[in-house]
Amino acid sequence: MYKGIKNTPFESKVWLASPTMHGEELRYMQEAFDSNWMTTAGGNIDEIEKEFPEIIGCKYAVALASGTSALHMAIKLAGTNLYGERAKSLEGKRVFCSDLTFCASVNPVIYEGGEPIFIDCERETWNMSPEALEKAFQLYPDVKIVVLVHLYGTPAKMDEIRKVTEKYGAIIVEDAAEALGASYKGRKAGNLGDYNVISFNGNKIITGSSGGMFLTNQIEDAHKVKKWSTQAKEIAPWYQHEEMGYNYRMSNVIAGVIRGQIPYLNEHILQKKAIFERYKEGFKNLPVKMNGNDSGIESNHWLSCMLIEKNAMCQQNRTETTVTYEKEKGKTCPAEILDALTALNAEGRSIWKPMHMQPIYKNNRFVNVQEDIAADIFERGVCLPSDNKMTVAEQKKIIAVIRACFE
Image (tube, rainbow, N blue to C red; front, side):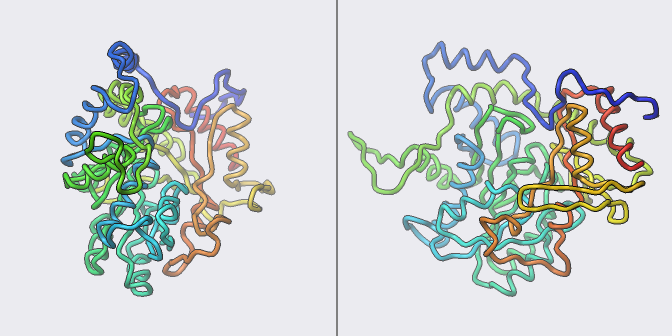
């Protein structure tokens, strides 16, 4: 099926994941322009703050400038509610964090003066391991906050993780930045933790070019985040400030882009799922495994990723900033596949480098059970081109090029 496909480069680049625009976004951006609401207030913001609780199944939403700012507000709020008002809500406190993730999931803990402790992942979903989390609580029973990431659009094993956190009286900050539209046992990502966030970054399942959202079922929490995100202004005839605030509110123009994207969320998810299934079919009989679902988990398949079996890995040598490999017959490695994709004018990417391997966090504690699973997935995994504008013919060519790496 894939024999005879020429590996000549694409004329136009096939991206990992880029925005897919439909035209309706312009209508709401124009509405912001015509009404002169070009600031961090207006009808578009009001509407998406109404729509997303309905989409996700929670009660309240606060539109913010980015997923990172939403996560910062969620972590600050969790610390404030647990430990009381202070300049940095987590000063001197330890926080358990997903290890296999992007740094934006962890940095807000540092903003608030906390100490991240990284928890290894498990192999089925690549998300935080419930067993490693249990071990972490045995080592550090004073921890009360767990920052949990749903990696590449696949929700974590929430029942098992919630069982552990409830046992030790801890709460969950849910980073669902990559998982909008995904669900766990019928419940949507973004409504699985105690404090929850999603992202509208340019590469996400729907986008505003930027933007994020804090989601909650507690009106007091929504009010607090909205206040903090508008520089913590008090009700007074002048600018009155009694606590630290932030310029984190979403622009009404960005909200217009998101408002125009909302009707296409399910369409984008179906396109992503079709991409995943074509990769899965195309890699049959290869020594690889796709990231995907576990029982009761419905991924949005934001990124399709593959893991090369250990016995099919050629020699790959990584430093902090470079990588080399030695080609072996019948074997390959992520570096070779990424080189092949680049030569094809297609964008792939390495799996997130685990936080405990990052120079900035090299002195932070890392908890695993028997082996370092996150490091192993980083070593053998590849994020594949997953753009929902990629044609079937383009994807077949990508599959053929990847298959050739194993020859």
